[in-house]
Amino acid sequence: MNFLKMYRTYRLMMRAQWLDRLKIQEIQERKLRHVIRHAYKNVPFYKRLFDDAGISPADINTLDDLEKIPVTTKSILQEYGPEFLINRTMVPTKLKTEHSSGSTGRPFTVFFHSDYVYVRNALFLRGLRAAGYSIGRKLLLVTDSDNASKHWLRWRYASIQDPPELLLEQVNRYRPDFLYGCTTSLRQLAEYMRSTNLLGFQPEKIITTAEMIDAPTRRFLEGTFKAEIYDFYGLTEMGLVGWECHEHNGYHLAEDTTIIEYLPIENGDGVSKIVMTNLELMSMPFIRFDTGDIGIPGKRESCPCGRGFSMLERVEGRRLDCIQLKDGRRVSPYKLTCQLEKLQGIARYQVIQEDYGTFTVKVETGKRRVTVRDDEIHKVMHSVLGNEIKVVVQKAVNIEPTSGGKFRVIKSQVQEA
Ligand SMILES: [Zn+2]
Image 1 (cartoon, helix red, strand yellow):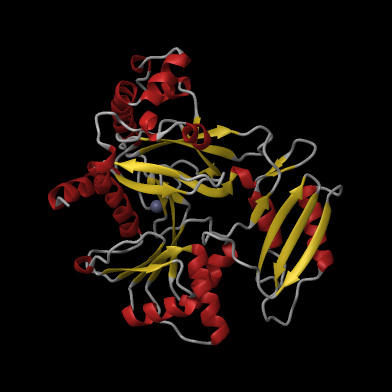
Image 2 (cartoon, rainbow, N blue to C red):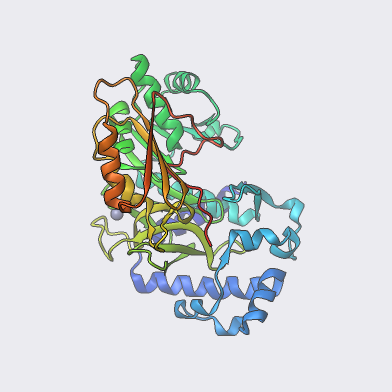
């Protein structure tokens, strides 16, 4: 690790977030031209993509030109081997790799060159800083990667595979100022603490990541840890793209390293596809990459903190989790979760769309005395999705967690046409 390089990258980024719109756009367009030229020259996939679309790098100069480039999805990239996707001036065995979870269940590996690793670290650090972190504070990260503890930084790692009792032990032993981890792991930890009445050390701030956090989970974590929650929105292909500042007004977007576009979804009801271009990753470029996430852009200049980066109001989940109805309507998962969360007596729930017209609602009641009534759930489901659907309610004390550590509130088994 070259500390000077790391520090320079970090300092540039810390400054960039306060720049004005014009300056940010200038940076984006300069970096865009650079990444396009390199991708065309050195990455066979993009050479072919551009040639087939009848465009050349010279055609792409401004953000408005982006729409000339076809959008790429993960499943398209998965059809090509690394030899088509990796910059051929680089040696694949010298690159760092990270695996990205594929919605199709097929593995997908992303290759990072060493300079990009600095960018990635700096992105993460910038997000932490917005949550009040400073170097020297104690941080415990609950992640799925096997990172060596950075003792000099006072960073320790725990695994999302660790059961809650072991996590609690680690929190109490290390007493971190900041606790970072995927939402499901932290939620399970909090549930364990509540159910056993075991007290945990209270960190100053909790940073959640890896899944969209709903309002009840946020309140539950806040209440259990007595700590402020900051949510991070990151992707293997882009690094930390969105993070909250102390205003909690949505997510500030890393526009100095990423271009974020919102593309309309047919019958999408105000929700858009989130498409991104990575402006720094030269070893394996992602240009107009459909993230598979859907969301709502934030309003311009909506955050009083003064950061110049535009905002993402929220991520509503993965497009694959959208509920597609027989009449062609697509309902964002958020619509349903908002309504269900208003009901009393639900500890946790999961909605599974079995086919176009059949839904199973699994409800975890926990050990509460008040339990939601089936007809209340039926009523909500019908009000959001119409009266033609069939609803089955299943109640259990616990909903089994899905493999991989991520919990999906809405799961649609209906394949997208
Ligand atoms: Zn802000």
